Image 1 (cartoon, rainbow, N blue to C red):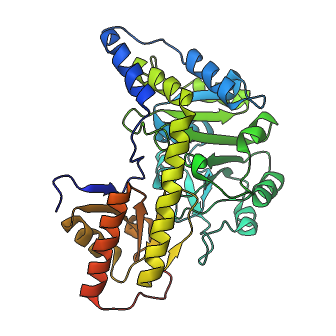
Image 2: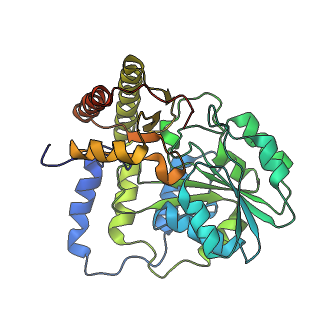
Length: 349
């Protein structure tokens, strides 16, 4: 077992942050005794210039992580007795933050074969009490996306009383040609809240910076709940520096794409079923219960994400790591399969 386990369970960027980020942080360490700006104006201006396409600072709000953004959204839009729609298996914070506000969570499960969103079923589940529809795009843990056609159908079919929350924190990894342009939808005035993050491709998970893109009236409501000094100086400086190094982003995306190809080839060779992913992770079926295989992997110094907490009792989500980590994972999985000497289950979960 290696001294430090391979962390393939949190979808982190194995390259870490950009060198520009590290330089910017070091340059601002001496100012840690000073309070940061009370607002995020400088970062929103920088983000607006980066996004372009008519995105203005008024379309943007930064948060202490995407999870805080989801909490603010629930606090603004939900009251006890309201309903929200989620499409499981998906990120558990949608359900958790809605429940904190006393809302009823209605699960419209993804398609059991390819984990696509069942658009008609979502629209049919809407009632007079529905306030939010949450979509992971790409979705965690499945890596599936909502394509442009289905997103348009949802926008056109949802009543004005329902806001669509498109969680796109993995959007930089997407290669699918029919991926929607949700920031453009927000600029066009559609009833959508888009979530981006600096935790994934930018490698700043430890600093917790999220981005909301939406109509200015929605942004204003969310910003009304912000804490004083809601982001620290290092967070804002690091985020600005990360935007400035798109070469690092490209390298991170290329690493993830190559790593997925390595994993797909290994799964095919080992006879293990998996799903193609538009994120920096892959979901695959397991020959033993997910928690058991997760524990056996950990014994070999490899941390992977059990699908059990998503209701996927025989699936594992593995993050793409550096080549050494990917090979260590493949070797460990092969050993476990040989030890187990059982065929992969065919029940899909």
